[in-house]
Length: 338
Image (cartoon, rainbow, N blue to C red; front, side, top):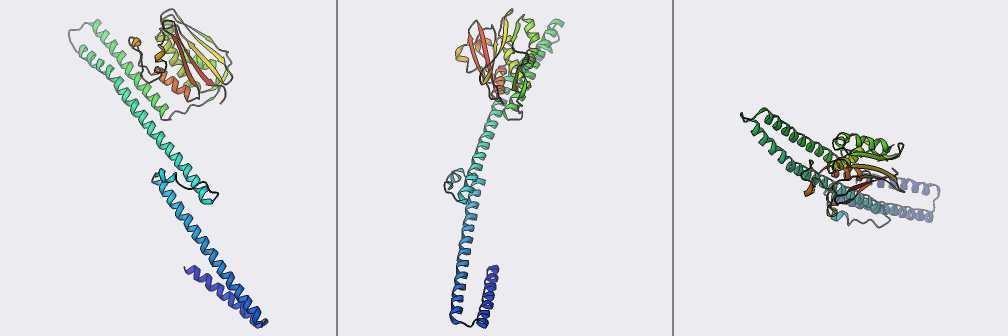
């Protein structure tokens, strides 16, 4: 308000000085009247435009304040009703606020989903740990008896070691799964030698394969370069290979074949195992899923789940085909380009 009075006073003083100058040097009534009318008209137009501009500016500030308040309060229903179709500055600002709202909603949903996934994972792990923990207590009770022989004692200790290994594996799997699901692990796809990745995966199952006299055959060029995360892709392939070893009879064969397609590279892992029922094709990649016919085989049913997560995070996918009693083929598809 003080600034407005100062501006008005300054203009009046300047106008008065100008018209005194006209009277002293051009004593002409018509010229003086025309100058006064013209001068006051300019002042009125100036103040009218200034008031209009200030009102427009204040309206914009109020609108922006309301829009930001809706956004801060996460009132997405009102945010979605903001005017964004006009070619005005207000609409352009509202478009940005709407974009921020969409990002916040996506982040909220992602955070909620990650929380639910983590809770589900912890619940699953707790359920899975109960069995080995119960077994350990029973073994401990049996071991505490004084009348057991040395041979029985060694047998009980070996059983306890097996149960502890199972708990250790479950906890390790939980850490891997949770880190993948909540995004703590970022897969780094870079052009790498696929043959070396497959070799790394096979190295982890060689001992188990030798115990069952299972032959591992690899059909892949030694200099096959493909964009992928070497460490985690080896982990995914290892899990599938280990699964094949578990459910294959003695004296059989597992083949690893690599074939380049137009957009993807296909890695087939073919075993001669017990096979998978067709109705279970979609279930075997779920966490802790195990077929009824495989309960007598050591495992917890998390390897294929991890494999699928790893491959999907590299924009790939896994397919399975199987015939009961003849074996299974797991096909891993990885994009040829980054």
